[in-house]
Image 1: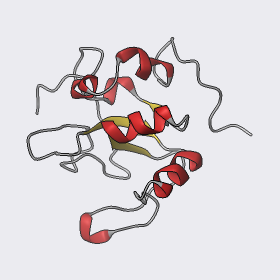
Image 2: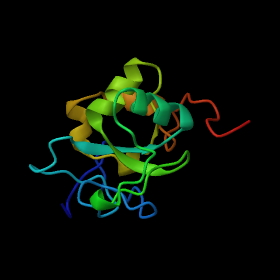
Image 3: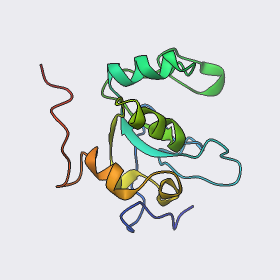
Amino acid sequence: MSNAKNVLGGELQECSNNPLTGFYRDGCCNTGPEDLGVHTVCVVVTAEFLAFSQAQGNDLSTPMPMYRFPGLKPGDRWCLCAERWKEALHAGKAPAVILAATHEATLNHVTLEELEIYALDSEESELPDIFGA
């Protein structure tokens, strides 16, 4: 995992330590054979995305201490399953992405071009101000 690459081909950067994220709870969107959900997309969650995810049966807002899950609130960074991000993309509810902290394995599920549209750390980002008024 120490040599993990991001979707841009560089070294995988940290996604979040507060809340502590990642399949391995190491702050990074690392993946491996145990990570069947492919938790590789570093996102910044929004209220709209959290509501969408809950409606799909994946409640990301409610804390679950037994799984070391604090519950998320808008603005939190989190390593999201690649297929969940793709599902949100197709529904028009995809949260913003941090490309430098998104694992290259994500590209097995979505294209770099799709990610770049939602990237907060890319000049190609076409996102409106998702945290504005």
